[in-house]
Image (cartoon, rainbow, N blue to C red; front, side, top):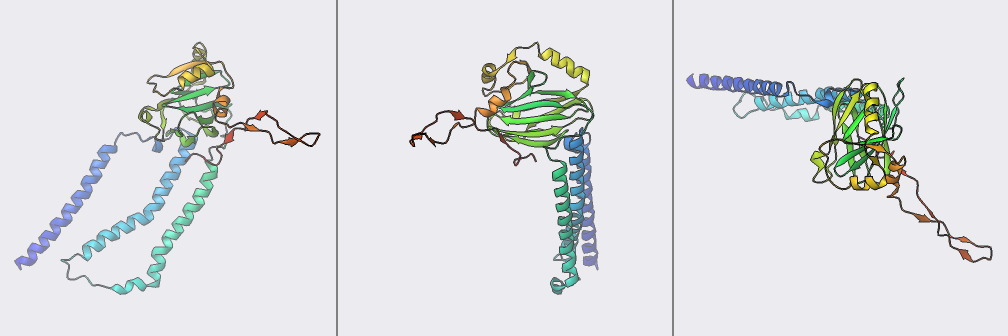
Length: 325
């Protein structure tokens, strides 16, 4: 009798301890994440908002499998524990057609749904797809350096290092390349992560719904200065943006010669601004990785081969098939 009571009390204590452990984890997690800003889940732009919805949808759909599986795992571990002599072993379940259909059918349906959603969202969130807006877009050319970001505004004739400023509710059309190891630009509050490679140019379209400073960073390890390769994405009013452009035009000029000095490996703790004096600077950065090709040898009038030495530069390679994630 005492042995039975002792076993019963031990089982109750174990259950109570397990419940307390789960509650403790929930409380600690709640305290830890309270007030923590997770930019991906707190979007400030059209693209980021759609990506957040996609993440939440995917998690909820996955929980249809995750919750029952881990619940059954706990139930089976408790029911068929060594000390439970009342548990009945039924090995014939492995050939039950209905059960097999159930636990294989649901994952198959989930994968099918995810496939459809992935197809639709991949086209909807294509970084090459322009954003609809009544405001005229801002064009920004981005160059990933070691270990800093150069933002060129060809229409405003200014440039900046580690500060990306643009008007709120205005589409920003990016062109991206790298003059260093492959890198990746990411502004979690605004959306897509896109890779940049030397000698190639890719595109990205983002827009901020409100004013504010958002953290931008490199999402690809690129050497010892990678951790400091961060920048500020500043969404401001149109008036503040125009005032910033006016101030930047008063700074020193940026051409290929001064760019060469800027491109040397190093970090910039504070943003730096330039007046753009070379409108083709971005194209020159991309094209310097292009290999010159001689023209094909053609026969001369007398039948002898005539060699042409004129070089033709290859066109800029486009990273349309190497899009952001």
